[in-house]
Image (cartoon, rainbow, N blue to C red; front, side, top):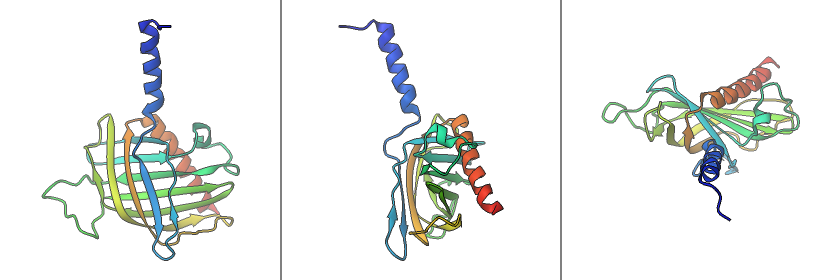
Length: 193
């Protein structure tokens, strides 16, 4: 049975909307420099926001929209939420690229049924494009991170680590704001303890 052209178009638009927040090719891994333990979350949703052509905030998560609600209880949630903040877009010939160069910070929130840990660090992000377009991608290898905040029930299996990330994220200020609010609410709660 053939569907009318308008039905096929509506279906294609619906599927395209579903896929807009998901990407293939997104990868994040955190490797302990001491034990070799590794964390590789399967991040299914991405969004980014940019204030100008030089900076961008990229959010990557495997949490559902309901779990991202800043008012939702966290004691039953297991998942990850990462933010990569590029504060300087490198320019060929003008930006030094050395082992110690840094143009981005990274935060990784780990939730496991009430246990909460936050890893933070910095590294050099190679952007695939200029922020502000419909999609923004990039990669960062060997960023140094460590656990900076946790609650009493979180056991850190990683310790000092290196983080690799590659992503492509759609420009979605609403989704980025939701993920930022969830991340910042949890970090503020940990700092208040």
